[in-house]
Image 1: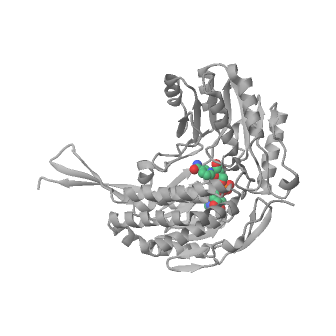
Image 2: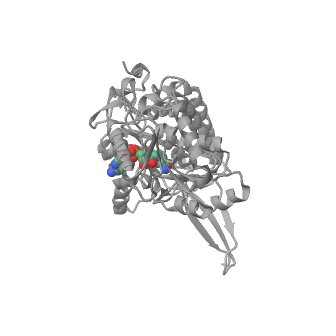
Image 3: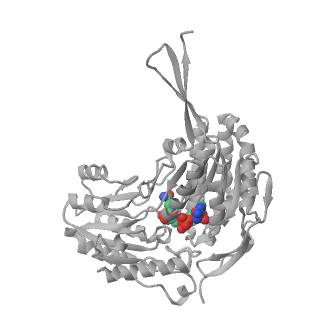
Amino acid sequence: MGFQHPDISAFPEISLVIGDERARSGSGADWGHVYPGTGRVTREVRLASPADVDRAVAAARAAQPAWRALPGDKRRDLMFRLASVIESKAAEMSPLLTAENGSILIAGGHMSLDAAQKFRYYGGWADKIDGRTISTWGGPAHDYVMYEPYGTLGVIVPWNGPLFAATMVMAPALAAGNCVVLKAPELAPWSLMKLMEAIHEAGFPAGVVNLVTGGPDVGAAMVDHPGIDKIEFIGSGATAKKILASAAQTLKPVGLELGGKSAVIVFGDANLQAAAKRGLSGAVSANGQGCVNGTRLLVERSVYEPYLQMLKAMAAHVKVGDPFAMDTFMGPVISETALDRIDSMVRRGVEQGGEVLCGGARMEGDHGEGYFYPITVLAGVAPASEIARNEVFGPVLVVTPFDSEEEAIALANDSDYGLGAYVHTTNLTRAHRVAGRMMAGQVQVNGSGEAMTPCVPFGGMKHSGHGRLGGIEGLREFQQVRNVWVNLQD
Ligand code: NAD
């Protein structure tokens, strides 16, 4: 029988926006987008080609001087208007987010409103871009610092949250006076096409934001392009390595927001029910495909058994199924390939000593047509095993016990990644002490994602990337610094 397939009559038509040209198709290959809830094709898209990238870069470069020169209050007003248009389209946008990657409907609604919030937050910065003066050595001289946009930014985002990722880059980049060439991922193209409708309706000048829907060849053409002044990349470490190697040829700066294997430390004094609920969200959030999901649970031995029992009982109550159904809390993973990768990592995890507490094999029956994997918890996982060290990017949690605060800190930091960390405790001094030693870009105490708002910096340490999006740090990411020294002697 299977689950409902998306209604494609509401899909946006425009897949390419270059300056004032708005076209249904690019000049590249055909791509049949697959809806992961049913495993069936939704609609064909003619993707962009590297030649389309050339034209998009030219349009962005042509628009940039005027965009940079536009007074900050005018950029602010346009961004506020865009926020309102996105809000007015939220009901149309959320089913598209479900249709593109199987996000549950509720998450789609939240992401549309979150996109609006980002433009509102950074619209508020657009009219507050100032510099600073410095009392120089060796005067008399007057010295000041100016913040300058890079120019044309290439934005490459992943399929797991294209609207979330693109707007977390575009809002600060546009506020700072940059123009954008945005690549919508071929695996999940619909929400960014809809975003372009909103940008058009809000009245942005042509060329300020350009869209090329495409795959790795289009991304690579953006990285190689001499007309792109900076690349902001959100995706996997493997792709990031290729991008850095290519960017070396044009000495292009690259911002990187990459994957994670974020630790969740549960101390014996924690509110165990709340910690179990939040721990489970590491598997459920974004259908287990969130970069900052807490997937490596470290639990103090004194509460290890009761915590596992709570986790298991709660997992049994999470409805996994049709992402369009309002009572569904977890949908499918993105593809058959992802399903195979997750399943084989879980199998190897078991071979390496992990005990399956729940889940552990792909779902059948109604779920068999789509790409469904159940919430899977592997207990007693050795910290050195593959599944404890590598990003699974599926609804899989690994749990390891610890005996002391020092051991918990050491285990949490013993990772190539450093994106998020979560600490569960009711001991105030311990909370701050441990948070201050986490080698991760974002630490949440008694939280599980609530910090992800536009006003705080987000980003990784180590293999999770560098640079920050959100807050004033996010604005600085898209500004270059110019220092001006003026001789006051003659
Ligand atoms: P991916 O690296 O395969 O692809 C990301 C994007 O890069 C896609 O748009 C793809 O078309 C493009 N691309 C692929 N090869 C390219 C190349 N050679 N040159 C230029 N562009 C190229 O990643 P994915 O599977 O789409 O996304 C999952 C990964 O993204 C996970 O590791 C996840 O943790 C990470 N992620 C990180 C964040 C964050 O904010 N830190 C957010 C979301 C996802």
